Image 1 (cartoon, rainbow, N blue to C red):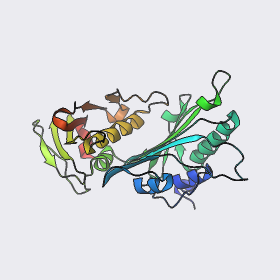
Image 2 (cartoon, rainbow, N blue to C red):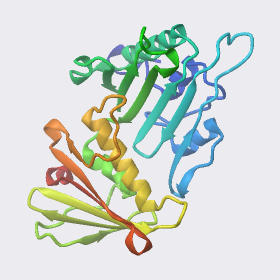
Image 3 (cartoon, one colour):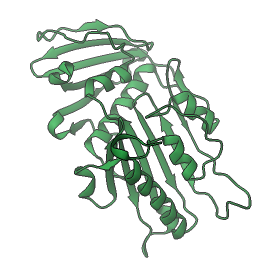
Image 4 (cartoon, rainbow, N blue to C red):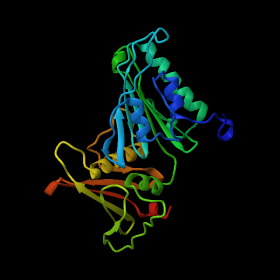
Length: 282
């Protein structure tokens, strides 16, 4: 099947099949749903429905047709992003083969971006409603193959406001237009979270909170994680430099964004996302 500009249609499921992942079923485009990913990894969904993500390891096919020890994987799928990390390669050739399969598939189905051609260890591609990041650490004489890494990350190629709706469970028809007075106004979310929005000058603020339970991630905690991962991908953070301590991002033409994390006081998670107010007009 041919997509835009004569390129084959991009499919994350097809990429997994190319990597010889076992039991790949039908997947939505351009990103799979958490439920589809959970069926692949056989790991339970994380969170409270419908605010959930999938987090687990993919299994590679085995048998006579599979003549090498499979690497280790970690797949994370949320509403607005997909991250697949492949590590612990048995030898250098296995890493090279997988890297050629992944980079070749992206080149065949998507188009390299200007940002994705300037740094070693980082490539970025776009097209067909998706932006794909390929981060990698090559094996070399000073690095064992088991420490080499291939990291695939996908996010939706859409205006930031559309992604914010995905992150906060906001319906497409929900109007987000707080006046510039700094006051908080409640928004209705499909998640079990108390969500408010305000505007102060050029900054729009989203405050979201939910009860915190020991040993569990609250709904607000899930939303904060999703915001952090998405902003990290938008900023083009290279592999090995993802740092959860980071709370501010320079997003180039999109402006600046930041996260203010709460301290879980009174057994409630409270976080804030600050973004350019211009995003709300998209």
